[in-house]
Amino acid sequence: MCLGIPGRIITIKGSHATVDVAGTKKDASIKLLPGSKAGDYVIIHAGFAIEKVDEEKARETLNLIDEIIEK
Image (cartoon, rainbow, N blue to C red; front, side):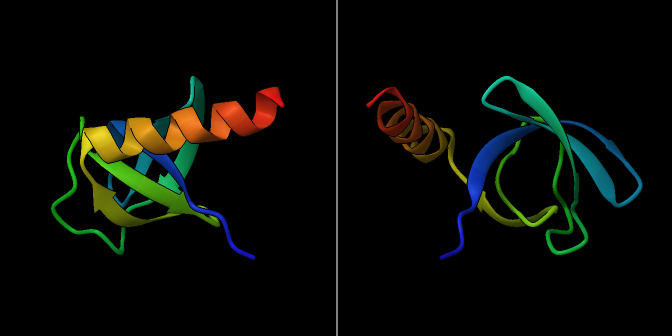
């Protein structure tokens, strides 16, 4: 099973971004998503941003993950 986690791009340097994933900063390649910018929400998998998502979907997914962790 593969799991992609949503996060918000904080900064971009070249083809890499610093992404806030539930309060934790992660580095991710944005080579697969040209045109990405700070503030965009993306799905991170295996160190790559693989899909842009809207903020509502990102927050919904993060809330579901929090619920699972709390159980």
